[in-house]
Image (cartoon, rainbow, N blue to C red; front, side, top):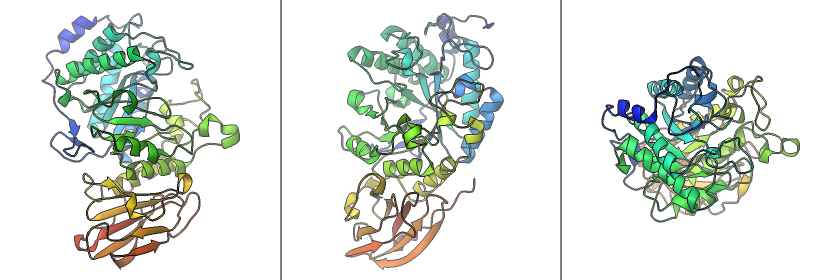
Length: 460
């Protein structure tokens, strides 16, 4: 590092002249969704680019962000103090994030690169889901390189630094970084960092910042922080196995009090060794990531995060590989599952979604796992997802209208096909056009009087 040392105290003094903190996001009035500060609906469609700040140069970052913006992603989840030896392996410009691995001594040159990426994301209409640090900097557990550098004191100081630096940017803050608190002391460190962010980014006002917590695989933030004032919405990591029953996790949080939005911030990735066992189970595919997305959202999640094993680590053959990626990150940008996330957003935004609720009363047989049928509705429309194309036995009359328009939506292509108009009474079986693995379908039911248009396919 050749950059001039800028102590944290001086940094805070210099950036104290930034504008007063702006509120970019807030929880919706019904406490189920995230909206922009003015109440405009905001659909959280995330991608995990954990190593974005650490491993990509500016030209590469431009390429990645442009690709994700064109596909309709809205949030990019990335880590400042990155997982893959982020404190000791410099960024592409030779800069480390901290001096002497001290969170109270950030290196301004490193953060200038983070600044560039945050600004480019904003220019493209993207929000950064910013993790100040990966969890191994708090404790390494059985994996992770660390080193362990955080305590309650310096976590708050570092949180205030990054918060103040990006206070005028559309940021969703994410604590945790793939680690579950082991005890009250760990909880206190994450709480201190969140308090620091609130002080720096929100001038001490929790309403001006949006914060969640990213746990380890199989866990959810509600276990530790649901009642904490700093946690605005819950996040699960349902992990990288096919039998996660993600809808059960979302339903658990959806039913908690006090009411908070919830979502899956790390489901099964595309191109990932299934359950970390590629030899016996192979690699995950597009239908795996589609299943997680639709089951999560229809169970009550406010948004969803996609991930790709090759992309989160920004893998190239010259770099250390984590758990056997199969292709470079550039080759993976246009994998089928990533493109099909575009259709997820298209569907969810095709109807007013802030009043949408999960409702399994719509279906007479829900099944489980790989055959799950999951339903969601508002007053005048319903979406029902058949994971493997099994017939959907619908209890009619749950949504409004004497007659309903029925449509098949294809999650693979984003195309819609009208089925016809039906009486909204009794029961009716709708049989998808195809069935079996990789043959998922969404049944759209609309109150005919509303004249809702079919979801408009977005070209990618």
